[in-house]
Image 1 (tube, rainbow, N blue to C red):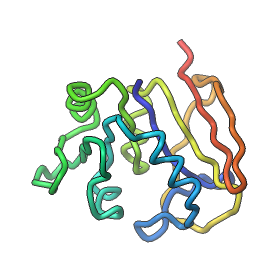
Image 2: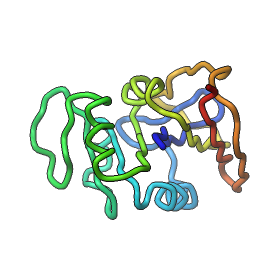
Image 3: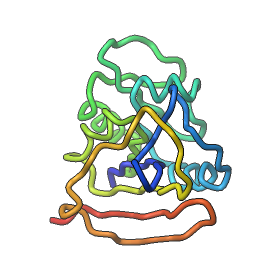
Image 4: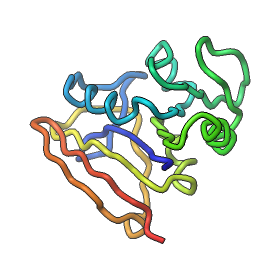
Length: 155
């Protein structure tokens, strides 16, 4: 499985503001940890910098056009290269952002796991538009502050 895993506002598709998540929702963060634990994660350089450290318990691969060392992570020059690196580690690959990395991942991903935050937040980074007709809703789960939706790519 190659999954894009992102939290965004339901209205406006905000995923970030000033290099950070604009919300603090412990239940969503805990849900994210459970989902991605045991798989390999791929993120862009800006996402890595906003987190500030590798996420524990799983291989971290950072996509950066300016290849350099990132402590505790492997570095790939492109999303396809990162996916090939991740396949060496795990069957489950989670692409966790940001916007540009998600956009480049639509063709490679077979799954999207999206947390739609119910409250509106201002932001400066947005989840890219995707062709909804290419994705089928497989699962929906309601949480107090967000709705979790799993999409599978139609074949």
